[in-house]
Amino acid sequence: MIRFYGVSKVYQNGVTALNNINLHIRKGEFLFLVGPSGAGKSTLTKLIFREELPTRGQVIFSGKNVARMRHGEIPYLRRKIGMVFQDFRLLPQKKVWENVAFALEVTGVSRREIKRRVPEALKMVGLEDKAGMLPTQLSGGEQQRVGIARAMINNPSLLVADEPTGNLDPETSWELMNLFQEINQRGTTIIMATHAWDIVDKLKKRVVALNCGQIVRDEEGGGYRDEA
Ligand SMILES: Nc1ncnc2c1ncn2[C@@H]1O[C@H](COP(=O)(O)OP(=O)(O)OP(=O)(O)O)[C@@H](O)[C@H]1O
Image: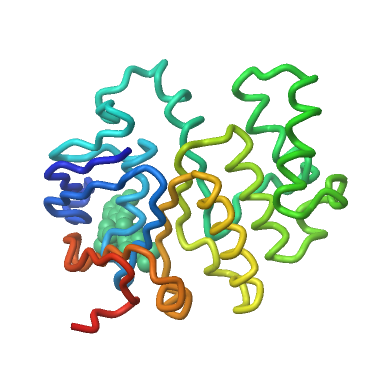
């Protein structure tokens, strides 16, 4: 599904955020990306949906070199990839259903289709009765559920989450992790950057650890820290 071949990223200020990353993520996987602050986790996720371009190497998504895509292909790429962020990134003036609908409107989907799909997405995240509320009227966990509904509205094959539970209490974090696991069980590949060591330790998924821009561990069923 995604391959990184010798990928490095040097930002304009000279900081090397990633250094020669080689990684293959298969369809249907659930992968935790861990490592200390500044290790390069966010940068790696940004290369997947082309928010940043690699300085060297190639990122291949569904057989296509992401950096080489023509402008017209980028919206298509972003429809195949759902994004979830630590700070939710909801539009504060728009109601819950409008936040989710917006992701469809920009892709030119008909009103009728929007009316059908938005309630379905809100139901999946358990928020069907909050459709008319504003984000500020919701708890943090509920806001992140809206973020997940928005990310899933185009039925993407990949969900990339950058510290999705970073602003949430432990109980709410676990509720959301159950939702992410359900989404993964229905076939969506998930890449999640996280500092939540207890979640990583409990779920025993594939763990890719970064340090100073390099992969220092890639372990199936691994924990947050290297046990070896
Ligand atoms: N836009 C940018 N311009 C310059 N340097 C950047 C930029 N974004 C990130 N960096 C630097 O690249 C390195 C990797 O940052 P990145 O955000 O990918 O790490 P991270 O592992 O996600 O950290 P955190 O856990 O704190 O989110 C850091 O040294 C950071 O300061």
